[in-house]
Image (cartoon, rainbow, N blue to C red; front, top):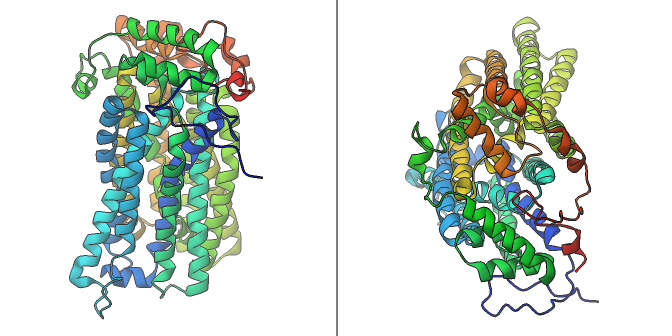
Length: 549
C-alpha cells in the first residue's frame, strides 16, 4: 500500500482552501523533524573532522604534518564561513521568507561538501597535494560549507520558535539539538568504522565520511516543499492572504481567521521602524541590551570549552593517558552518552529554565575541568605512562562533563535570542548569535591544537577558569526567558532601561531570575495541547487540532 500524498507546497500559486488529503505525518511533526535534521548538519561536521584530522592520507594530501597549525586553520575557517552565512541568510529570511533562505543554505552545503571531497582525487598524479591546491580547495570548501550551515543555524531556530508554543519552545529546540548530537555521533562512528576497515593510510577512510554528509541536505531539499512558511513572517510583510493560506494548512478554516486577526494586531502594536544591525549595536539603540545578552551567551558557551571537546575529542582523551585506539573508542562512547543525555535537556529546559541550567552547568563544568587537570597531571607527569585507574577516572569525568554541557549549555544559548527580540529583529538577533558563535569557536578550535602542544593538561585549568566566568556573567546579567511570551521577555529590557540597571536581581524586583510559576503547568503539558481560546503572540501555532485534520 502506498503512502497518502504529501501536503501541497503552501507557497504554491495554485494553492486553494479546499480540503487537503490526510497527511502521513502532521505538519507539526514534519517541522520538528525537518529542523532536527537541519541542525544535525552542524553536529555531523564536528564529528566528521575529528578523525579526518588524524588520517595520514588526509595530512599528505593537504601537505601538512599532524602537529601543524594548519590542522586548526582548516577546521576553524569553517566558522568564519558560518558567520558570513548567518548574515546573508538572516537578511534573505527577512526579505524573502524563512523557507527560501533555508533552501538556499541547503544547496550551499551541497557545494561546500563536494569541494571538501575532491582535493587530491582527480586528476590522478603522484602529487596529491596538487602543488598546494588541495589544501586551498579544502579551505574553500570549508568556508562554503560554513556559509550554508551558518545560514541554517541562523534561520532554523527562528523558524522553529515562530511555530512553537511558549511553554514548549525550549523542548522543541532541545530535541533539534539532540539530533545535532546524533549527527556528531554518526559522523564519528563512520570515521571509526572506515578507519578500522581501511586504515589511516587510505584516502577513502577520510573521503567517505565527508561525502556521506550529502545525505542530509538532499533529504531536506526533498521534504522542504511540504512545510509551511511562517505566518508571522507573512504578516510582517503585509501578505495577509498568504498568511491565511499557511494558517489554513496548519489549523483549518475555522481557526485560521482567529489566529490571523490576533497576529495582525500584534504586528501593528510593534514599531513600524525597520530594525537594522546598527540599531542593535548602538549603545542607545532599542535592541542593544538584548544583543549584548545574545553575544555574551555565545561567548560563554564557547568558554565552556566544548567546541574543543567536540572537534578534538580523541586528542583530549589521549591527554588523560589513553592510547590512540582506546581514545577513539572512548570518544565514540562519549558521543553516544552525549546523545542520550540530551533527552534530559528537552525534558527539563522548559521546567527548570534556561538561566538555572546554565548556572548549574558552569559550576559542574568548572569542577570537572579542575579534576581533569589533576588526572592529566598524574597521567603525564607522575605516572609517566599508562595507568588504568587514572584513565578510568579521567574518562568518566570527561563523559560526565559532556553530559552536563549537553543538558545545560548546548540548546539554551541558541534559544534565548529567539525569545527576546520583537519579530522585526528576531532573524537579525539569531544571525548575531551565529556570528558570535562562529568567531568564538574559530578562536577556540584554532587555539586548542596549540594548547595541546604547549599547555597539555594545563588547558583544563584554563577551561575551568573560563567556566567560572561564564557562570558569574550568567548569574548577574542573563534573564530567565522560559515560560514567557515574546512580549513578556521584552518587558525585561524596557524595565532595565527605565531602572538604569542590567543586573537581573535588580530589574523589576528580581522577577526575571526564575521561571514564572504560573507557566509551570503549561511547560509540562503534552505536545498536542490545544491552543488557548484567545490566540496571540504567546499562543501555539501548532496544536492538536492541526494533527487531527
